[in-house]
Image (cartoon, rainbow, N blue to C red; front, side, top):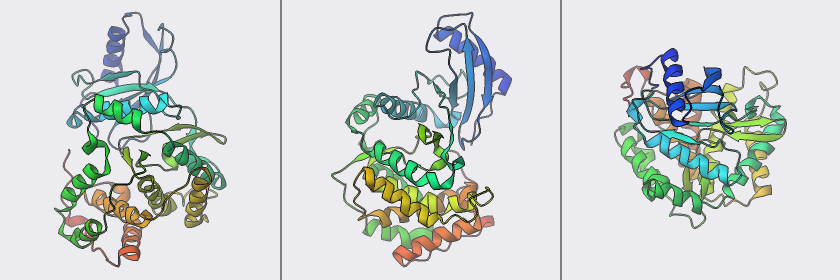
Length: 340
């Protein structure tokens, strides 16, 4: 999915030329040339630092570069979300520069502050639930009004940032997969009405997207799945991510092999509710929705959702709530995922 149309040397040279032009200083150089960062399923991210540059630009920065096929949407979307939330005091990287000219680096991109810290998943597991729950509750306490205004100023309407538009898009995507018909009918029949209590939702809030220094949250990363929605939608996503892929991803880590991840999620929910109340009426509904999305993503090529044990757990979660057992086609019968 990543755009590899230019190599690392070209990228470094072109980025520096672009920054010299935009910052109006031909003497700018790198003190730390762009270095790839781990992660990023669909983007290329690089850490770098400039010298001979004005105040505010001399610290470590991060380049987030999107594939050309994505157009300009994601760069504008994510940078807008991050800038508003950073302005609200939430630990999100501010993005002072956005470029939609895809001729510069081969795709749209933005430059943001580098967030220090290590992934929450690397912290002692006993500390994860409280930090996760508190940070999530703090996000959902932020008034979404300024963010809605900023997105609409950039041309994004409620169909883009609300759950109704997201659901309609997903329903169309899943309708092409007849093996999902039964559970999709269930999701449509049980679909909640729009909540009166809407919040800023991350969409992918889990310990690998959260940075910490000791017991302090220093950064929350990766906002493409952001939505303005019922906060229980966001919490349900986290519970699925923590009870299914997390348990397998952590098995190789020292101190995590015997962790009861269902218990971790219970503690996360208690920690969340200690800082903010939560109506859990539709928690199970949104868990099913996230599991079905994961099956679709696996079918379309995302490796994490193709692992047999994870697929079986997703199917079991759906069945426990709906009574429907999904039959996923064999991996070899799946079409190659098309770039969007």
